Image (cartoon, rainbow, N blue to C red):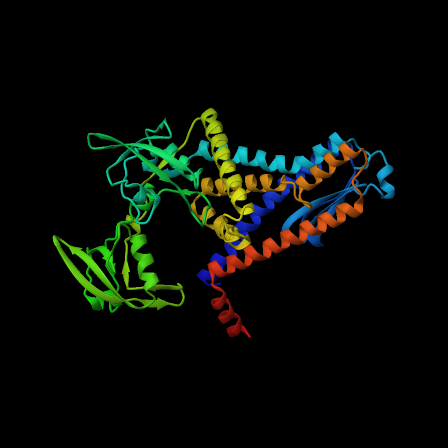
Length: 461
């Protein structure tokens, strides 16, 4: 097996481990509370579809099924019209409160797993950018960003946001991430002056989080300085050398390597005028980008030293009590972001393309696992939190839909008819499958490109 094949294999393994753990914890919640409530559990399955392996213990058939995207617990008498419904150990025979406990136990276990894993992450420690504990002094301002529109400048120190004081980047970054689209009243220090600025955050399309354009991660280790020139490449032929700093592309000033790469990519092979600073001199070069079919990008043949990219990292870990507190706060922050994204999706302010499907989740699991145990635990905690939140939403088929049925039963004093439930569940299932197909297609297009995938299929057949 080649290195690429081995990497894909491990990606699948990490994905299965992460998803399997989340599904097991979720279904075990339903199973445990059902057992404690005296309800007969007929099946406990990880996965859907045909049974692969399994065993029977007592009244329950435990199985591993073919399709790994989920799982289920089958309870006796779930259908109130079934013969088993009148039995004392059936689901339908139990009180609404007991049935509600069974339903919410799954999402609760996912939230509990997120709480425990996040506390472990902060206890054993994880690497994080050193700038988080530094003063919020602006290192650069992204062009065409909210910060640029508000007149912020390099060297400004942010003192307050909406009357709240900030002494480090850590909480200030959280404030930005959690409030996409909001307006901020800033108090900044510029030299000996205190200035007030008003800025409206934009929304990062990929994550749905807030964006200001002064975040340190945009600038640290991202300066547009050439560390290597590819021999015989377009840049080499145009006369670029190691150490050149690109200051503008086609007349547009740039601050970062990322901005430069985006403008080169947008050129699509047309001649680009580069302004370079070489020592104390400014030089002009004209270069035409070439297309890399494998990387799906336009390039001119310059590279940045990987050791110089990214912000310096420090290991941050906490005593157990503090780790529990930090983990809880992190989950609260992620919950706030999640509901913010859901709200913008429902109001069509955010495209479904911002969502990650199974392919990007698998890639995320692999990247986290390769970065270390703390990153993998953080990733699993994040997914578990999402699963717990999403499952409690009042959508038919999901646990939140069953909560709605139970509340309706409490109000009308009889179970919701199976016909109504079947129609609602089928509608919910169709919508969820449609969403899954859309995000999976978006994954394929983002990761490989649809045209690239078609080319691969043609080469096979």
